[in-house]
Each structure stands twice: as structure tokens, then as C-alpha cells.
Length: 140
Image (spheres, rainbow, N blue to C red):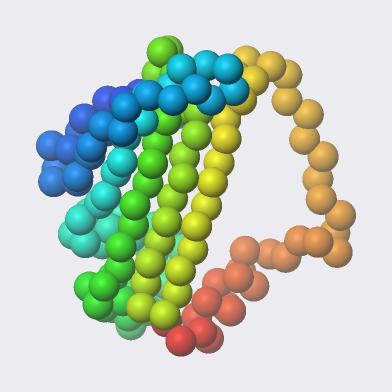
């Protein structure tokens, strides 16, 4: 899998109608970073969703319900911050759906450092199929 240039992805998104606005600079972890606010259109959310929903194995009626939810008022805003090398350093995302709100914040540090990952204990994990079953039975 080839690595994608995140700044090129922002330029491409802007060409496809996604609102991309510069936020200026700030210091993050001792480094100057450049930020952008990214607000996808409903059409781009649906296009991205269709690919994801296909991978998830959603039924046509579940896909229709998900599309209707987005069309009813979904709003997504991301604030993405990059260092001078073009590496992503922070992403903050907010998702607003009718009756549901979610916020997420990710920090990216120590690029190139060795990574050590330990599997979580078995009591703290569930198969993805369980998540999909719960999703299918929710008020989607």
C-alpha cells in the first residue's frame, strides 16, 4: 500500500467541493504546525460512506437508512495540523447527526520510532461482527 500525501489529499478534496480553510499556525509538542479546517459536503460523506458500508457488508436497506441520516443533517468538521515535513500531527473531528454527537482527537508523535504493541486482554475485545450486529439492530 502506497503512503498518501495528506496535503495532496487536502488539495484534491478542495477540488471536489470539500471546504478547506487555513487555520494558521500553532505550536504543538514544541513544533510549529499548520492547520486546516475541513468540512465535507453531504455528497462527499455519502460517497465515502458507500465505500465503507460496502466493506462492512451493510444491506441495501441499511445503506438507504445511513444515506437518509446523512441527508437529514449530518455535519462533519475536521481540524488537521501538519508539520513542516507534511506529517499529520493532530486531527480533531466532530460528527453531528440527528440525535447523536461525537468528538475525536488524535495526536501523532514519534514518527520513525520503534513501535511495541500488546494485544488487549480477551475480556476487553469483541469480534467486529458483534459490532455490526449491534449496529444493525440500533435505530439506524
